[in-house]
Each structure stands twice: as structure tokens, then as C-alpha cells.
Image 1 (cartoon, one colour):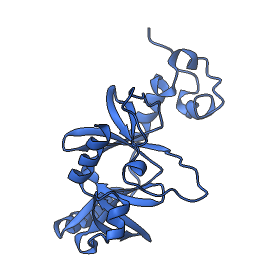
Image 2 (cartoon, one colour):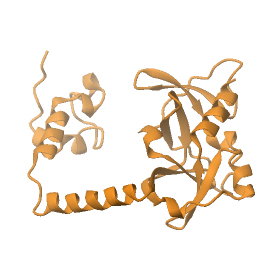
Image 3 (cartoon, one colour):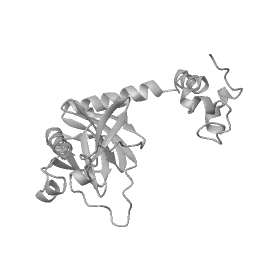
Image 4 (cartoon, one colour):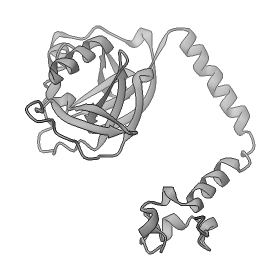
Length: 221
């Protein structure tokens, strides 16, 4: 049955009476979340279909042209994220998506500090690991281990979910800025680090796909 749109559908009703508001919308009980409502879909389409501001296309054409030049000269596209007290960088192509926290199904006799269990990611159960425990990363003194994000990655064709504390976003790092990882960093990241880069005042350990995949597989057993 097609539901009638609320009268406030064009007024971002989800921000007033939906999940981002006071949750007084009578449709919420049946729809559970605003993303399942036609009003939310129409609002998204209206946002995407609105005219571009003056100079928008020209500005982004220039920016993308600059990125292409940097990539051609040798640069790495990285997803930079924090695990406990350390920052890590992983090739952006290996990152699949970022999920909000959700239940982890423990596996009897196999779950551990590093291997937490299984997480439903888009209908597929993927092994979920805590890279902090896996790579022996020290905790931030006086700060709770939030694990506020779930990062889905694909390593050597295998999907994994990593619990991370903070995601800085995508960064383009010139190859000339990458340095060999000191032994202290290599030890702290469980020998999964292939290099080091300074990025916006952060010391970022670059994770090697094969080494990280091997450590994860070892944790799952």
C-alpha cells in the first residue's frame, strides 16, 4: 500500500518530527526509520536535482584536474583513521564503507580481544576485529575506548570489519612524503606497517594490505 506523504514532506520533516527530531511522526511506528519513507527519498532527490551554484562546475573541474596531476606524479590515496592512540592510513581503494555501531555476534570458543565476532554489513556476515588489540596499540590514557565507527575493508578479496575510534577522511599523499617505518612503529603496529607519513600534524602508519590480512586471518584462526 502506498502511504500518503506527510504535509511537511517538503520541509525536511525528518529533522522536525522524524528520527532527527522529536519522533512524533505517526508513520515512524510502521516505517521504523525516516529513510524508509517516500518523503525522505523525495527530499534527497530534490537536493540532488537543485541547480548548481555559479562557478561550481568550473571550480571542481579545476580541482579534479589538479588531483589528476598529483596522482600521475606519484601519490597515494589513503583513508586515515585513528585506533586508540595511533593514526593509520590504508589505501583508499581497500575501504568499502563506514558503518554506525551495531551488534557483534560472538562466535563460541573463537571470539577474543582481537576477533570480536561477526557483524552484519549489508546483509553479509563479516568477521569483526579490533585492530587495537590485533596490532598491540596502546590505549589513550584517560580516554575510554569508544570504537565509535565500524570500517568495512576488502583485503585480498576478503571482507573485514574493523572497529576504529575516529576517521579523518581521505587524503592524497605524495609518494615522496612516505618514509620507512621506524622499528618502534613497526612493533607498535604488529609488523603490519609498511611506511610512515606526516599528515596534518599526525604521524600516520601506512598499513600493508598483505601483512594486515595475514594478521587478521591469524586472529580469526
